[in-house]
Each structure stands twice: as structure tokens, then as C-alpha cells.
Length: 103
Image 1 (cartoon, rainbow, N blue to C red):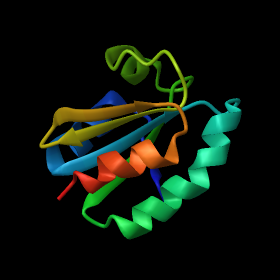
Image 2: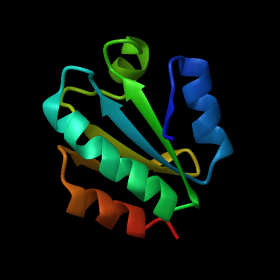
Image 3: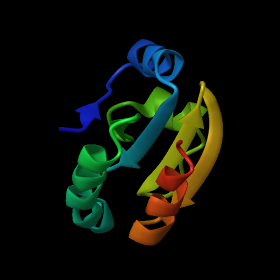
Image 4: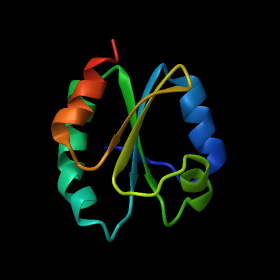
């Protein structure tokens, strides 16, 4: 199950503690977010070396602001705490392409 992060402290800790992180910035009212969610769950099972988290932009507004999220879904990829990739929109192929770099 993809972990939902609600606080900035928790968010920063996860980025610091994991080599590879995929963050799904979503909103509960976003149709494409709901459509891609099962695929992200599937990717979590396939890419065991990547920590998958999700951030509800309406609940964790401080995280959304810090990361400059203006469209949902947005996926950001981090390597050793540094942003290494980004996908705006529910593009399964582009998300997979970024995940393949996490090796």
C-alpha cells in the first residue's frame, strides 16, 4: 500500500532515509489521479528498491507549495534526496521510464 504522507517532517525524513523515492502528488477530486492509482500500486510491487509515497495537495498544502505543484497528478522522483525526475499527468509510460532509471 502506497504510504500517504501528511506532514513536512515525515516527507523530509522519507526523502532523507531512502535512496529512491517516487512521490505522487494527488487530489481526491482528481479523476486522472484515481485512474492511475492502481498502476502506482502495481509499480510499488514491481520496483521494490523505490519508496512510493503520496501527498494529498489539499491536505498537505505546505508540501505542495514547497514542491511547486500546480497540476495533478504530478510525480516527482528523488535520488538520495535530490530531485531526479518529474512527470506531470497520468502517463503510465513516462512514470515507468523514470522508475527504470532507479537502479
